[in-house]
Length: 366
Image (tube, rainbow, N blue to C red; front, top):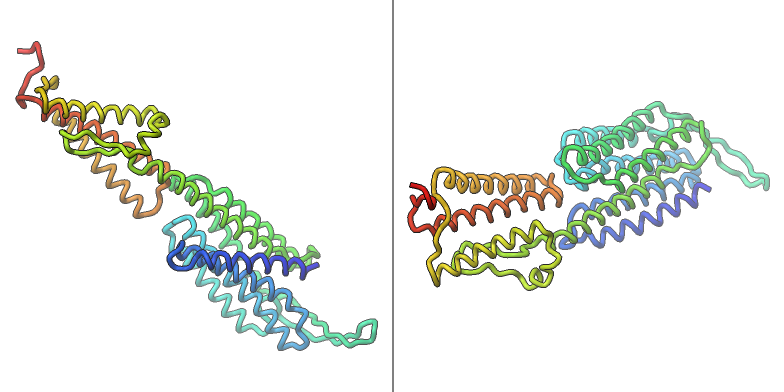
């Protein structure tokens, strides 16, 4: 029962590793895809090495076949926090580095131990089958140092969940449901394997299957994020042009003109204001326009405040983009603020420039 589950897990993980490795070739999607592929391949090796325990016929072979899966499992869990950090575009470095040091120490201890971190003492027992054929069995006792591995596993999983919660609460991004679901499945299977190792439950180890489900959930999360970006980028890319030439009417791309009926009401009002300003500027060439604005300190303050707001919002947008802690919704909102303030400031500036005298009073005032 154990070997078929491990073989199925190893086959699926091997396919996932090759698939992500192909798409992670330089010039395609980058380093995150490569790390995803490496984790799939480590999982495939971990599952296959778990099926090799029955191949040992001596204590030396048993030592080798017990150290190999533990070492691959340690490398798999050591890569997990860095994969989550890159996947969620977080800037945490200290805690992943500490977890990496802990896993590195456990890896060295596992290699130096006689029978890995799983077993402390192993004895060889020669038995005979019912058919009379000789057989070899091993009697092993648990290693107390394995509790350190269990604590480090739980710390890694809880820290990964903390990164997901941090993204949702502090960074203002949507909850990564697929990723959290995969982490919960991995946590449940890991806790189940703790009971199996302690002898409280007699079953196959499920952690390899849990890790496979997590990696598949991480792939679904990456696809959903990429789909949102691809969906929002073409629609938000320069639907209309704002030009500083007052004698030229702003042009709209053909695609934006064809979908003018689908533009939201708020955006349509902004486009109408830009068109009115351009029309007034165009009419000024043919006939003088009588200004209807009083240029005083309040008007100048409105223009000055508009320029300052544009600079502040644009700087905030660039800073958040550099830090990588802004989602598409926030980016769209900041862009809308900059665009609205720019249109308003341009309209006031246009009316000032069309005034015949910069100290002109309102009609009916002395």
